[in-house]
Length: 361
Image (cartoon, rainbow, N blue to C red):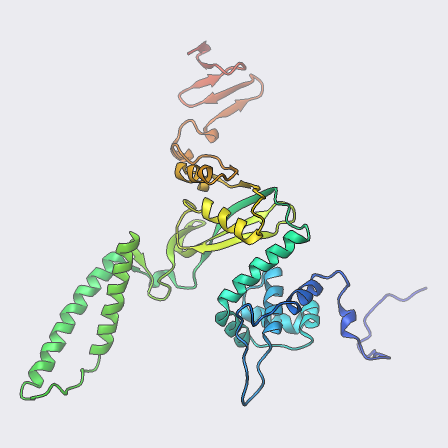
């Protein structure tokens, strides 16, 4: 009788392990390695660090491979990527057992935003050449990404106006105090009192926030993330961004992506399709774009038609379903009578005519 298979933690290798044997020949990590190794990182605009003294820096190709691996596996946290560099077998193979810390990963991402966008376009064009992008049908949708800023620490327009008025009063009193204490001084060589500089900085920040609210037509502002906007996230309203993406139908490859500050999807249909065309690089191809009602405003559909874009988008015009008594959810179908009950005690007979109390109306 054979013994059950169990690990032998004291087992040793007869020959040293070969790193190339750690992942299968068709593993996606091999594609990432070959793809990055063929790139001219300096020509693409990546910062090429040089260490005069101290520890040598990590090569940009190594950090880029880790980030592409993270995007492929939906890992966007630098700390989680650092852990994966120690625990994920395929990433251990990809990095050659080198384990960059999260700070190095963050600095690389921070210092190369434009170059990373060029990489995204190149991955799309490679996918087109390999046939992974069908160029026949694509889908557009958006999702809200919560900002890192705390929602309770946001400033409303009313709060900022009230705080600004209070600061103006405090600053006036402090300035008068400074003048009174230095009335006999011929040259204004005094220093600002403790707290005045901080209040002035806060006043300038509030004025900047009010100006931005007026320019954007909004009523909320966050001092930590001024770009974030209050948006609906599920059942709550938080500071967030509106992320947009277009995926090709054949393999689900993303051919366009963007992050906006707009609370809804209006006005995003044409720009996203244009970006997808630019990224794909095949001007002759015009795939049909699917989208939901968020992109169905009359102006968006008219703009798409003007640019010759084939879209399938339900129009967003009309009363919202919750306020429309004739919306689909308000109808009830009776399978025995083969009738549909609609609001105001009216019914639809099998021929589609509206009836009330059995009489067509």
